[in-house]
Amino acid sequence: MTQEEALTILKTGANVFLTGEPGSGKTHTINQYVSYLREHEIEPAVTASTGIAATHIGGFTIHSWSGIGIRKHMSEYELEMIEMNQRVHRRVSAARVLVIDEISMLDGKTLVLVDRVCRIIQRSEKAFGGMQVIFVGDFFQLPPVTREGDLPLQFAFASESWSVAKPVVCYLSEQHRQEDLIFLEALSALRRGVFGDSHYAQLAKRFVRPEEHAALAVTKLFPHNADVDRLNDAELAKLPDAPRMFRMTSRGVPPLVEQLKRGCLSPETLALKKGARVMFTKNNFEAGFVNGTTGEVAGFRKADGAPVIHTRAGSRIAEPMEWTITDGLKVLAKIEQTPLRLAWAITVHKSQGVSLDAAFMDLSGAFEYGQGYVALSRVRTLAGLYLGGLNDKALRVHPDVLAKDAELRALSDTLREVFRSMGFEEITKLQHDFIRACGGTMGVRKSEKPAKKKEPTLGVTKAFLLKKLQLAEIAAERNLTVGTIIGHLEKLVAQNLIDANRDCAHLKPEQKRFEKAKKAFEYIFKREKTMALSPVRAMLGDDFSFDELRLVRLYM
Image 1 (tube, one colour):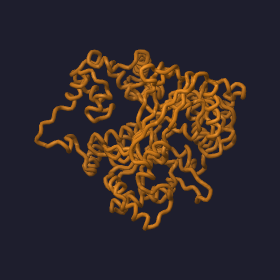
Image 2 (cartoon, one colour):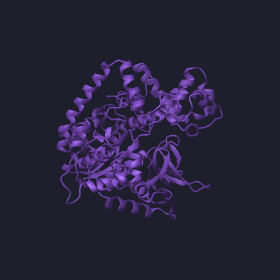
Image 3 (cartoon, rainbow, N blue to C red):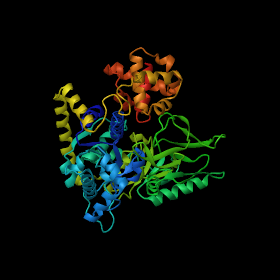
Image 4 (tube, rainbow, N blue to C red):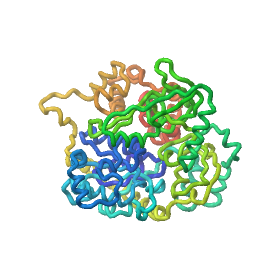
């Protein structure tokens, strides 16, 4: 299923399990859907199973959002106390759409508790209180963390609440990370449980000796924190000069601030030196980096001391950025830090969701299903993989997940055919009915009086554009997303209301990147007679965002 098909289904209000292999675009699809809801005056509850995942999407952990904390069992009295918690009651009762990211790491028993809280507060016996619930993730990746004394692991898909919610399955099939067909085949074989001698032989070509990996200028992945901290501290100490210290600032509700700190990949105190190997920990498409972009500290800007990072795509300035937890438009907690971390090494756990051009990994100590698959799928090509070791656990996926996967793929294929057989009017009616049922608007914002004449939205964007404002500035002025503003530009160009090369010249991507993307569009158009974004991004990789490619296409 394509991202566009999944987005069409999400808009109908169905409960959905959005899944797919690493790099298939799950996060991008959800971000598009969240933007769509907000354009229609619907504020979704965006949550994740872990603090790290929550910081990536700017939301709560599902434990914090629902008020259950770390508990997996609650008495009726404890549930009543949650219902009486004003903050939890307000946000759960107001929610019409609930997104839970990284669902693979959420224990099924915890999902049942979330379901019960939603039913109690929403005053409904329907699954999750009747709201649309969207599970996002890939069960082949890391499973829930279990501690000594815990009851046996239960995947979310095996829980009663999953069964009652009856989510339809959108299994994304496009690939936007791996660019190497041989490597992609090995990963797919691992995922299907048919990893054999021929696949192992391909990986075996990437083994390096201990004396070789020490000299590799790539990020190293290890299963254990102790190995990571030891290597990063030792490598930083080898560099001359005194370290520059960058300290995190914070404000807001203390428990939520602590959640942000635990989930943020940048440390509270970041020590950097010239020559340090670093990784960006947040997306900033306009500045030219994403979570996982690696580079080296080339120096520090004189004006404010901001680190100057040399990456494969050129020099980038790492200015402080914010991580927030919001409730609607209200910011409940915020931290600010330079979006970097030392990157001689990171743990496999913290690499989930990151894309790397190259990495060394020693998986001889892998101890959990999914660790090997997560680590290997971080890199885009076999040539970018350097192996120090593999054990049997690293090359195995959980048997329960393997058995479930064939069923999920079949359900997704069936759903795809059902929607392809439906007419445009029928699908549009379902989507419009859902917006109305959620109390959303179909055009005129609720805050505007019907009698008041509304200035055309394209005209407003055009006025800001002609003032030479940047995309982020226009989006902020209009309280819209950057993607929506680019959509306005596309319509303005299509209607000959602006000239892209004249009026949008100040928004044009950096020349080398523009030319690279332009050539990819030309190649795809010559071969497939389309200017679609997905095949171009599949060709270029995650280094180019969809928004950047839309801008390039605008000038063509």
